[in-house]
Length: 278
Image 1 (cartoon, rainbow, N blue to C red):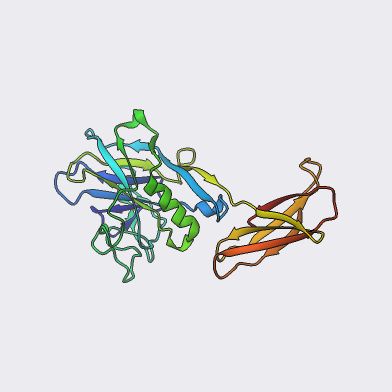
Image 2: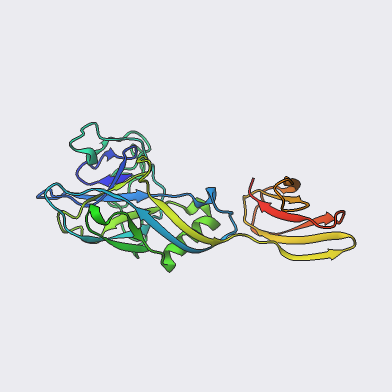
């Protein structure tokens, strides 16, 4: 969604665009800040180690009277906010959104019609988002799109933190580094723009089975688990597609991170095991 200084009580969470930068409006207020949030735990096992992450975005619109190039930075957000579902009813001004309803993010509020405001309108460094940039890229025109925020140690650390503790995942705020300059505004495709939606490219090392051993007719191994996550261990006699995976055991969510031990009686000449998130 977008925080819109020109329409500080409007939401843009249901639109096909996310705006960031400063428009061509002659006088302030004319800034926009974009909010992006991804949930990597839907695709990646919780105990994975993140190696690299890039964010790829499509620019779909520029100021009508020309544009100024600028660098845009991603800042990790420190507080929750509501995406909302609003879009502008005016096709000539799609970036203005529509009046927010309860719980939606606006320039003034993290959740509209509640006491949960941003520390200052539009968000404050240190209080609402991390002042240091996790990644940045220079954005020109449409012809150079898509744009890539290349992996950095901070970007990797952000994603790893969200993998380890999903409750802290409030996404990134996209801020133009030249907000004092008009014509730096850009429209970025949102997830509602199918085929051009933003996405992450992630390289990671999945959780692995540790310390395999045979003792007293049992094959044993262990693996590290995160708190509040269930796990399933499955096996099959070969890697042939003719053999299906069968359940060996399921582990309930643990109150804290720990190591779990699996024990399986040796009955076959060989078995293959896998660890899965149900």
